[in-house]
Image 1 (cartoon, rainbow, N blue to C red):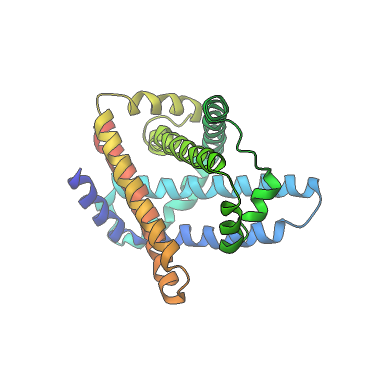
Image 2 (cartoon, rainbow, N blue to C red):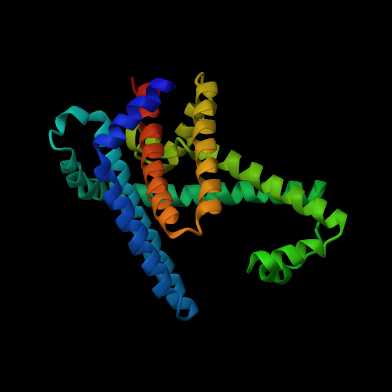
Length: 265
């Protein structure tokens, strides 16, 4: 695993141009969400469809760039020329990426539904309305007051629900984390690629897959904690934002590189 990490760091540093589409998409999508939230229901539906297409275009071009960086790394004398692959990726994988997004949504809803069923059966309702909870999380002070007002049984059930949702999230991400490289390396059909992902995930490399996922998850968890603690400082917030972008690029490159070495050779 250490070899995969070292090589992925080299590729990430060589093709740091991968940061350009990611940063631009983050900025443009944030602005789009802000300006598209005002309007009637029909307008919001239309805005959501356009946003889905934006995400599909970004993923198709960005993942294709990562694929080319791995399979044709030596062919790029100027690493920045990799950006030329973005429109080619959009043209080749746009519809496939839209299918992938829909499939991921279905998988997430399925696991959330299973988690809800398990939670209602073994934990039960907390006795807190959605309106009360939404008001409580508006600030640290209101949240503290809200938690102090709960009974011991409500606190226990709230913590149990949080733990259940965390486990559900971890399992869901694990099930789909090899989905993008499967579709971009092996099977372009997003539906066949999803089943191919399950097959590859639970193959003889299952322990290596779990190890890779745990490394990525722990790293992300650590960065998230540091970001939460130091996010109030403007300079620290800027540095941590750059670190978060770098981590996203590195994680994507590592997953694609790992998949290529273990399932395409």
